[in-house]
Image (cartoon, rainbow, N blue to C red; front, side, top):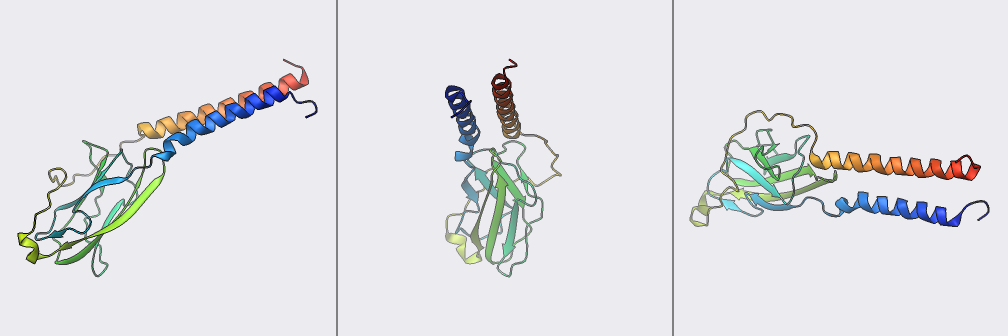
Length: 185
């Protein structure tokens, strides 16, 4: 390569690769649903008061993160989905009295690394299931009061700081390379 110091170019490329790996590292572990109430396939004799979804890491819940539909496709949740203020791994939505039949839970959250994760599952309300093992909520049911906006999360702040550092390092390395090439440094 004419006029370019191969060692400096290799160092710049190596530094860039390290920064990319640091930024991509957290993306390998998206949030995943680890427990749900009612669980997938549950048959409940009584209508549950809430759907509770437990994730392996804190999640962000925006733009209707949980929707519950009856077997006719009518939305039956109270449109108040929220992350628990006590534990940001728990997503809750209150339900009205559900009729017998199949119900579908659709959820969509954002992982701490900024990636959206979603899924669906079904449960049944069936009075003839009275003799079966009754499913229990993950946490005691507490009805919603309007949830306050909590602003930035630590995951979002960390991601923003890493991006700023990465861009700054690239700009600094590029400027250093250009000035040294022109002999002004």
